Image (cartoon, rainbow, N blue to C red; front, side, top):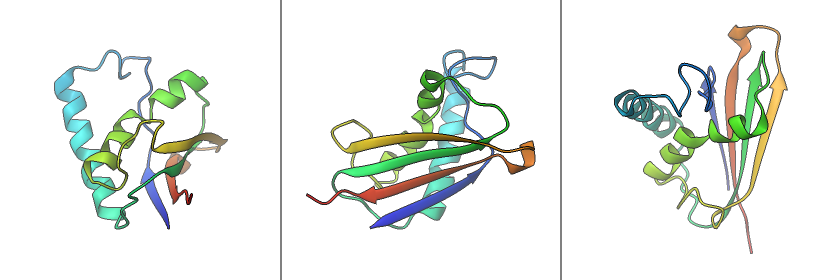
Length: 120
């Protein structure tokens, strides 16, 4: 089974004024609620075992890989919250594939999450 979720815009990374390490918990909680709803509206499948997750962004500016990987945090939590995946740990997400693709304008910036069951 395969689930594709498409979101406009980009996620906050670790750094910067809006970064996850500087974000007040109330602001983070509001953003988490927003992503919970956006993902719930799109994803109808439930993946009950191990999955492959491709986290792909189309961006005007690349992030360092550590910063980019951390930007998946709220999305991973939303997938678990909505029971689309069992857990966002390496026990269940095998592999996690981060991809950044360059676009010319901010209007084109977006995210695609591709979740596929791993059959054993």
